[in-house]
Length: 340
Image 1 (cartoon, rainbow, N blue to C red):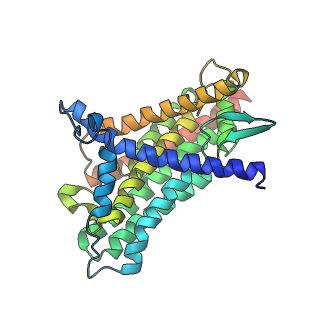
Image 2: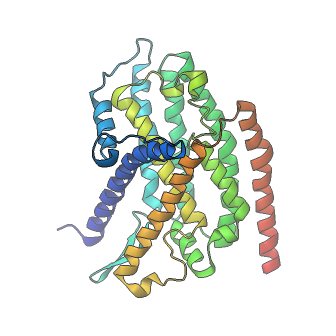
Image 3: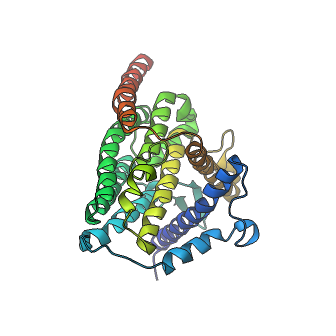
């Protein structure tokens, strides 16, 4: 017989993995429906009621398309790159708590796959690994446009990951921990971090747009300049893996933002523990609603702002966000010394 904690962990892995894939499917539809609404169009509305089955049709299209490998491609690297991009995007959700602890009989089950004592560093490490897939896709394709997209991605990641990492230091300083469980618990007791670290939240929000290669930071694709960027030579399900990893990274980044600055699953002025399992359900819904807001923000920004020039993108990262992130660390330190 499988011990309870192992069975519970397996169930949580299945639930989180399945929910992430379903959210990726929903985002492919939401992206087009929201943009259509903003532009006074209908969007996809033919497959299923109101176009609700369009993601399924898209999946079938990717599977049935011809799978082409360029003659000049480095086959091992070319085939490995989509996997390197997709796997870290799904693994990052393992440390994010998505609800209050659930009481199952005599057991208290935390709604989090693993509460690592270096949870923040774990996510930063995995997001850094993801760019290797993009760079290798550009190199392995044996074509100049994908190579330029991969090089742009590596430069962009270095530029904005520094500011993103420094913006987290303020949160670590005031919460005193690297685990998401500690950060969410601290916000339950003292209020959301957005009120204590507004500058860090703004820097982090801009940085995750750049980290996920979304407009106005999608220099790695830039269709008008690079045809399609690093995935130009990919087709069929290999292209779908790049497509899915972008949305998986958006979901993870939104959950990251919610957990760090907006209380995670916490509902203001509500004691979830006093409500029992009803409070657990309420906390999960609150977490999903917060994540949904930031996913909507991703779409809203994409269809509102034009793409930066590359020099503007670099200037923003190195000359604006990085000094502001350093200033935020300094001001947070002064605040903690004054408070002590």
